Image (cartoon, rainbow, N blue to C red; front, side):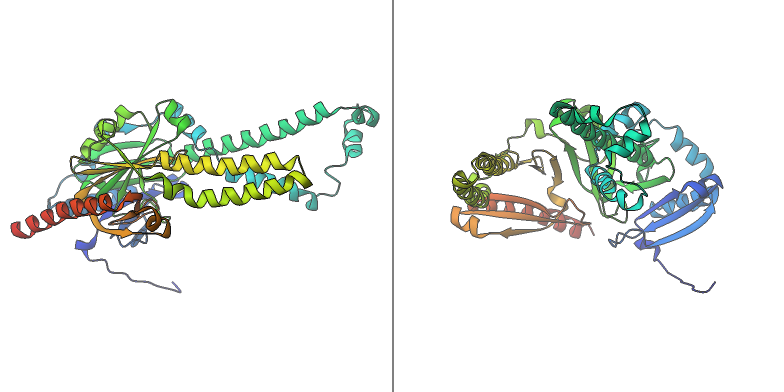
Length: 421
């Protein structure tokens, strides 16, 4: 009423349309329609709020127009058919809880610890006054508390740590349930339809042709139990944070295959012949840091002998981290797809079709010049926290050859499209 805004979105620019129902609108049978053009800033237009049936009808109308199907199709009947179709992937309550266990939140632990250290300023008594608590309990004498030995104090400290860990696990489960409750991924004519959410229900359709790459995420613990997460890198954003589209938050390898097949991708990583980077550039910077710490540790031998072993352990840990980063950094080129594996704790396997590559930069750091290596930075349309994709410490000739191979494939596709036009 006071401030008005009018926005025009050309129909041919519309890339995505989805529904979102927060708690209160959901109770009232309302929904928000969010329209995206792939401009990189989340939704470009939002209609809030419409009746749920009207919102679904508008979404279906835009889908039909984008597919060139302009008819008086019964949108309610079509939605019912989509809802009844077997999903490509779904999550039950048990899997939601397991997924929450892997979403352990260190941030919540830090906030809890900070809260406990600052709460004293807001209390009318001393939170850490033993005599006060003994007086409240009225059952244990102060002298008995003072006779508690070191072992009991250590047990109390461990109990506090366990409480913080329990808080982190519980918060991970709660966040996962709120976000992914009722998770359902199904194949629709327009692409992939994903429905999820407990308090805020989202219904998003990701067009198949807009999938640029696939990300298979795992870790040592998650992989030990056979679990993985699948995300799609798309021209659209999954949220205002610009994250990738999670299409299978917690799944076994066999459950990912139908989803990848529908997206026109193939996971041949197990049979691929991976190539590793050179070790030298990975170790150089960390080796310098380890030498500095080791030199300081040697000086501590004469000042604080007990601290020296700790410093030596830290220096060794840095070298181990550098080696692990090299050990899990590798790539392969199979059947028109580039496979890039990175990370030792947060393991990430990227499946990038060569034809989706927009640009490749060959970069050489001082360490690369010293060891005769180079890095490749891949530009992919859409962009997210997962890109640009970076291959490090390749032999210079191999890096140049890989870049030429991929760009040649991209050029052939571009020229064929021009000829067809």
